[in-house]
Image (cartoon, rainbow, N blue to C red):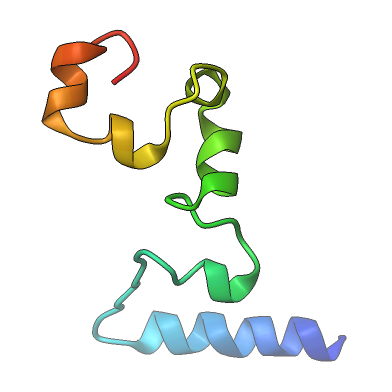
Length: 74
C-alpha cells in the first residue's frame, strides 16, 4: 500500500470517528490554491465571456442598477 493510500485511509478513519465535520469555503481561499479569483478580471471573464464581449466589468454588472439597465446580461 502506498503512503498516499495509507494517508487517505487515515483521513477517512478520522472523518468516520469525528462527531462533526466543518468544511469551509470563501472568497480568496481558492486563490491561495492557484485557482482564478472569480471577482478578478481573469476569473470572471472565463466564466462570463459574453460580458467581456460587451465591454462590461464585474463592478458594472453586479449591482441592482445594472439589472435595470441590462436585465438580459445581469
